[in-house]
Image 1 (cartoon, rainbow, N blue to C red):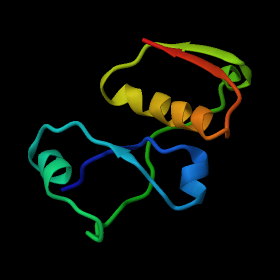
Image 2: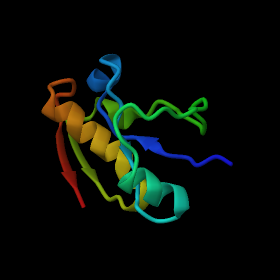
Image 3: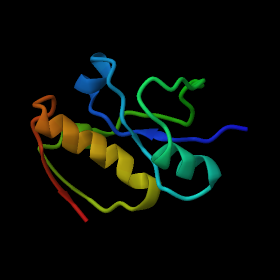
Length: 94
């Protein structure tokens, strides 16, 4: 059985092989992952899935977003990229 999770680390963190996942603590595995997983635990990870396309918004210097649930993770990644200097944009998130 597989569970999809979204990566919420910045691109810079990804290049440093430091990946962050955003996990909502509901369901059997998500609860276990949030409460019991520890450094050194190993997991089998599959390929990325879904459809990705270039959006003109990528060129914007000011971004306003509305997100909730699993939709928050791309914004978390963007916020981290802003924080670590990878992206030079302004973000307002609701």
